[in-house]
Amino acid sequence: MTTLTRDQASTALERYLDFWRDMRVEDVPTIKGLVTPDFYFVDPFNEVTSADDMVTLLDHMFEVCDDPRFIMKQYGVSDQSPDDKGHWHGYALWDFSFTPKRGNTINIEGMTALTMTADGVMAAHIDHWDTGQQVLRKIPVLGGMVNAIFGKMAAAKRLRRP
Image (cartoon, rainbow, N blue to C red; front, side, top):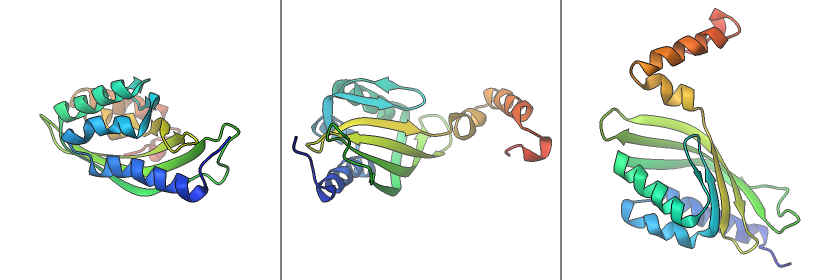
């Protein structure tokens, strides 16, 4: 099996992250050239299992929010890559900001686990971020209930997250 070198994998990862950094609504369909047809994407609200459905998800993002921006803070390819299938694994730490069509700007910090095929195409993108702290607590009415639940789950009152 032929696989990418570390430098080639890093270049492919950078190309994929550039899509997210620079994405505009008219760029959405171009993601299909960066991912496998059976691309797997997961975030706290969505599970996508194809490149076509990823386009649907991104189109929706632009429909419901203004000015979505990703800032990649840190990223890289795993030292343990490639795996026995020739896949490279990587990560990205990022900040995402957007303004819902009706609302105030929301900022989210998160990280992504990435899997790339032996030929440099992204096969999986799994986002990890704190939905409760960064989104649910900020929704009127619902936020009060979420804060109450979080307060009850804290080990001690002095240890509660603000």
